[in-house]
Amino acid sequence: MKIRLDQVDESYDWRETLELAVGDLNRSELMALGAVEYRGRINPTYEGFLFRVALSYEQTLRCMRCLAPVTESTSSEVDLLIHTGAKVTDEELELQEADLGVLVLEDLELDTRPILIEQIQLGIPMKPLCKDDCAGLCPSCGADCNAGPCGCEKAVDPRWAGLAGLKSQSTE
Image 1 (tube, helix red, strand yellow):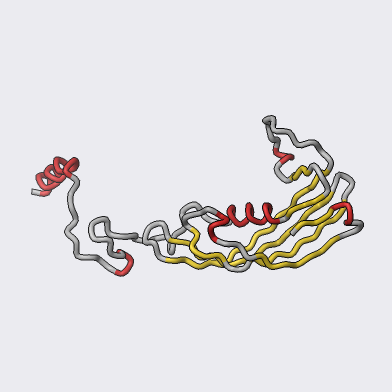
Image 2 (cartoon, rainbow, N blue to C red; image 1 turned 60 degrees about the vertical axis):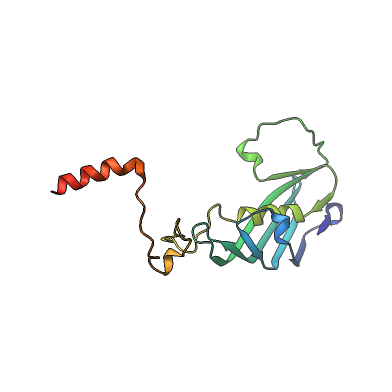
């Protein structure tokens, strides 16, 4: 959604639903993404505009240990101070802590889509798990170890065989 900031006099409220393809987010752990419902408000301030958005959606992720689908409801909120009319350059600038909640625009048109996509990407965990104690897959046969032992014989790494011999001597 694009908003013309020069037409915002007192306050502008909206509610919308956004459909995004999983490929738009470019995250391998994301299997499916439900409709993103968001509501927002823009208020003019002395320094620019105050932009507030609340998102809610459902996402299906792939467990990083057992590859099972994990569906979770997610919600987040965004508060940004928007400065307009500033010249944006390609030179590198050092960000200060006060700059983290500021969005600088060259013109008076705000495109909300990149902001929403960024917030959705931030809501995807780096290592999603179906449960904290997920046992994962058997490295030998690929069976789901959460369902129970697979029956494979546990192979001893030959680099640790010397220690296994010491253990058997100490028990004798």
